[in-house]
Structures are given as C-alpha cells and as structure tokens.
Amino acid sequence: MSLQIFLDRLDQLQSDAQNAFDGAAGIDALEDARVTFLGAKNGQFKDVQKMLGGIDSADKRTAGMRLNEVKKAINDAFETAQAQLDSGGDSQIEPGFDPSLPGHQPQLGHIHPITQTIDHLTEIMGRMGFEVAEGPEVEDPFHNFVALNIPEDHPARDPLDNFYLATAGKSADTGEGDALLRSQTSTVQIRVMQSRQPPIRIISLGRVYRPDAPDATHFPMFHQMEGLYVDTNVTMANLKTVLRVFANNYLGDDVEIRFRPSFFPFTEPSVEVDFLWNGSWIEFGGAGMIDPNVFAAVGYDPEKVSGFAFGLGVERLCMRRHGITDIRDLYSGDLRFLQQF
Image (cartoon, rainbow, N blue to C red; front, top):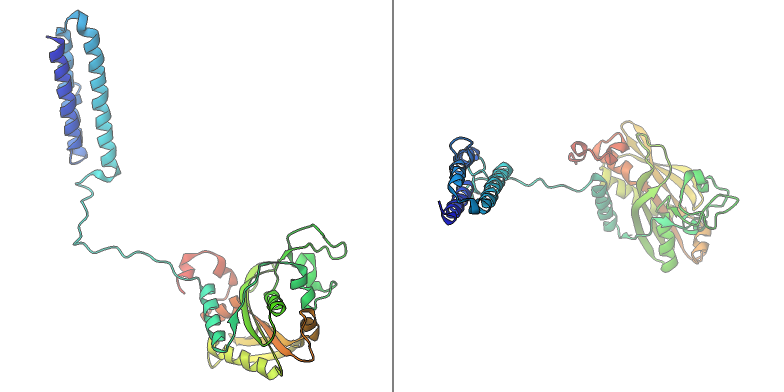
C-alpha cells in the first residue's frame, strides 16, 4: 500500500471520529462512537493500524508518526466532547430554553430592620420640621467631650469606656489619644452649631461605639438618634411635647412614656426618658435643656438662645416595635431571623 493512501485513510478516520463525537446526543451515544473508532478489538483505528504492515519500509517512519498523531487527536476530541456533556451540554438531560415554561421568581433581599427603623424615625421627625444632619464617626476629644461640657475627670472619658484610635498626643493624665470612635451622636450637634446660627432643628442618626460586653440589651456598636432644637424661648414643655408626639407616632397611641430627673453634663435640667415595655419601664434615652456651657463652647450667647437635646437608642426602638428581646439577633446575620421584617 502506498504511503499516500494510508495517510488519506487516517485523515478520513480523524474527520469521521470528530464528527461522530461532536454529534453525540448524550453520554451513551458518545460511548458508542468511542467504541466504533477506538475499540480495542473492532475499532476503525485498529483496522487502519493493521494496514501499517503493508507500507514500504522506507515510509513506515512517516506513517507511524502520523498514526500516533491521529490517535492522539481522536482521543482529545473524545475527551472534549465528554467534558461538554458532563458540564451540562447533554441535550437529553438539559433541554434547550423553552419560553413557554413559567419563569423562576428571583429571590430579592430587603432593607435591614435597623435601616427600616432609621428611615421611619427620619420620616416622623421630618413631619415635625427636623432635618437630618450627619457627621464623622471618628472624632476628636473636643467634639466628643470638651464642647459637651464633659470634664477630663468624668468617667465617660475613661480609656476603658471608649475606643481611642491614636497614641500621638496622648494625655498622661487621662490616657486619651487624639482620635476616637464617637461614643454619641451629640458630636454632630456641636458641629452643626459651630457652622450655623439659630434657629436650628436637626436630628442626627448613626453608629456610635462603646466597649460594652454584648448581652440582650447592649452591644459595642449601636445606633442613636439625637435631636437638637435651638431658638429663642424654647422650654421643657417643647421637649416633652416633641418626645410624646414622636412616641405616639412610632410606638402607637397606647404607649406610656415617663420622664425621670437625671444628670448629663451637656443638659440642665436633664431627664431620662422611659417607655413601658412588656409590663416594665425600659430606659430609651436621655434629654434635657442645653447647658449654657455648651452654648458658650460653640459661640452662642446663652442669654439670648435656649434649646433642648435628646438622644434615643435606635435598636431599642426597633426591638420595642417588633417584639425583639435580644439586640444580638439584629447583628447575627441569620437570614431566617432578618427575613421576618
């Protein structure tokens, strides 16, 4: 047999095998094609291989090399077709797209209950004329303490009760650094009063940080809503009215609210605000008339202006509204819990 006839037969074999593998409709059909071309006993490649004995000695080297190339090409074609079917290309197993079949409803996420609460609080306070103000979460001691009339020896400035971030300029007396994660959103009120003149009616909502041990009602990161109203002739009656209207709008007309005398360095007089929850009074935040020293720190004349401030825990309001008993559930990341809201 001439070399050319042998080579032509190999080319034809390779082409037929490639077409058979590409056209296989399933795993079973592909296996049948493999046996047809690569079968150890009756495969077509085996038949062509037997023809190598009829090639002239001078041409056997060339014929043998080509034979090996074709065998490798057929094996590669089989493995490629097999991989395509294994990955889902089997038309018998995975039919093509049928536009008449009903679609699959995509699973969409929803807003976290804390964010839902913040949006709701913003809407309620907005109806009373309060605008939203924002400020940085990394603060300096002036805005977080000094301007709020909190002296250096106050327990609120203890390094163990705050997340200080830097050691440059660290105070030898207090251990304070030159930056910390804000422990209250009252810092936003200071920044607003520094940049604007009364009348001011704002709320600031955001994250605050305190190194509290997590339990059912405490977490080292939580959210506050702080309110500030500064104008002429603002009284305690205005503060109580705003908080009662807010509580009735957010928690319902049947909610009970009370004010207890308290002390905060930045308000005088000061009160604690409690709501009746599950048969017991729960503290939700503090409030009071702004201390004259705070007005002096931001350049206001305390003889001409007056105002009130209040701070409420967003998580506690959210928990009260939805009947949640453990604040840690809000930050667990458990979708089975979060998808309820």
